[in-house]
Length: 399
Ligand SMILES: [Zn+2]
Figure 1: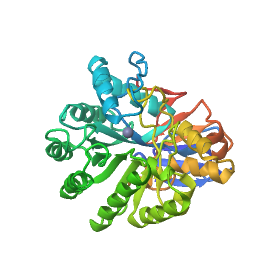
Figure 2: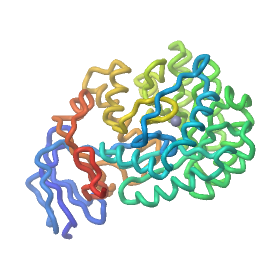
Figure 3: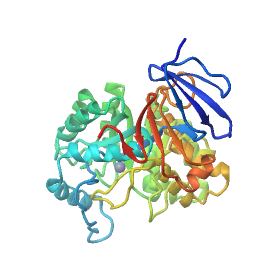
């Protein structure tokens, strides 16, 4: 069979050179360099390192100001307070550029760096109803073939405190959201059981997965994680649930951490961390050693929560490694796994990876191998989606 396109001189992380054949947007063969399948078109990758497209596991397409005017960060008046930050966000968003414009800015930024799959949370609650979701669903449609996007219906203002939110979450999944979100069941809604009743109730009704924002620290957060894990097991949802941030895991003593890591592994609950700057965060190596799927995302980019973010998952792997004290090649590769294969596992992505049968989503890098790319993320990348070049040197090619 003649392939649509072959990519020659593709260097893999182990230093070996290959030819990648692609037909219908999927990898149909990976052969030794000398063995070239017949093809309609040949692209010479010039011996550059080829890695899987990055998985952005946690972002907010509706609330970023990237590409809009700079919004100076406003600190909380009396220490970090989610309620106060949500109020700041509402004021900022009222003055921002249209949501679809901001979402496109952010998507182009992420794709330019090599992200080909993404999970975005989108606000669904009594304050915005389904409006944000409707906008982001249209943008997702527009970006078909450029990036695959999962959407989480995210109750930014709580579920019990925000009028009508349980019903809205249900409607959101009907409208096209893929997952049900949650937010600090204890500190925000002050009722863990009722909050989780809604989240898992809606998820169960629609067969949707769950991804819950959990900032609650220490033993309170750990208790909530145990409740989430217990429900996951009771409903047979192992592998379908993620907890984002899970700061509490960074606060626990080694014995307590070991116990909860075993519970997470047994329950198939994945943990998302973006290695936030100023506080303890989940200990990546210990969790992975216990068998927990730990993945990553940029989370907020230039929004009302913090001013940082460049949309680059390779840079995110670098930050994870830096903050985790990762130095060996194996450790650096662990950080990379969190933005590729582990992300794909947590998001249950179909057809992911540099393997026959997978979508031909890959990135070329100016680096000798993966550890070097993580240690100092290189510029000058080419991004291929389903075998087509869609971005070069950080710029998408359809603008
Ligand atoms: Zn978030």
